[in-house]
Length: 332
Image (cartoon, rainbow, N blue to C red; front, side):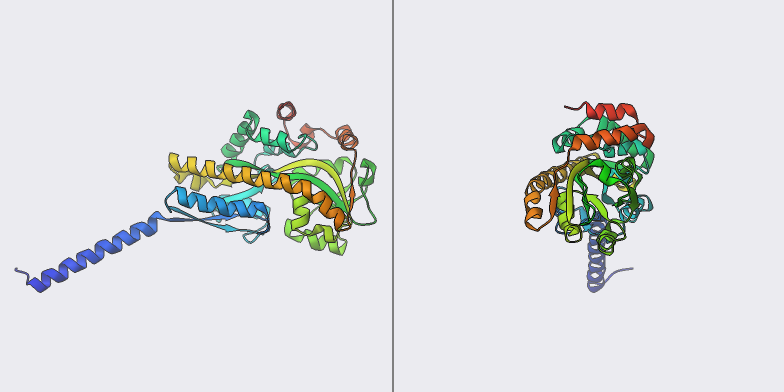
């Protein structure tokens, strides 16, 4: 059967259109959209550098990965987004090791009160063999992958006007909000406080209504969440030097090529470093800022608090391994 010139032209146009469509489909399939979730405000460095990391990964992978960041618990509370990694509803999260520690308890040893001397001690821990080993334990148990550790800040107790905390005895009977994770209980419980787990998004109202008298968080969080408006006293206990982990879901990590894994890790570690430095700078500034706002900033004897905690509890009481605790204390 012979084809007319017009029929040939039509056939060629059809083939070309099909090829173009296939090419467009291939490009659409080549770009992967990812969800990155956290519980922090858009004003905070945790959000700013999550967005930066998303843009940077897109650049370094030539547009293959498009990352949308969901801040301020918009994809759920911290427990929810941790679960979301397993359920496949999120691809990347920023989360406290306290929550990841529900899956692999030894990882939360970094929350044992006064384990870190200061921010620099924790930043050294982030590069240590003990952190790598604990991360691998979590990876093996959860199927997800930890790429970075971010300095979150030293946690301090804030309290209502009638309940200032200046010495360990002042914690006795204090109704204090703690995050809904077991790792935060050692400090208040060992000092006789009444620890009440409340989700992060609900803390301001709980303080305002008097459901609890107190809470504990780093100074930048106290500022961002405006807790200083509903708490007169800020006691510089520094009882936990807190951190966040950047965690990639198992299914996503498994799909990445070796080069992509390297890009994701390097970018997420750069973001962690930038965030940490910004938090450290703001902690220094905020003590004066809170005094100017009219808050009562109380400098406490940290040694007395540490001694009182260690008299009543030890790492192994909380499912942590003594050797991990000892190795972290020994980091110089």
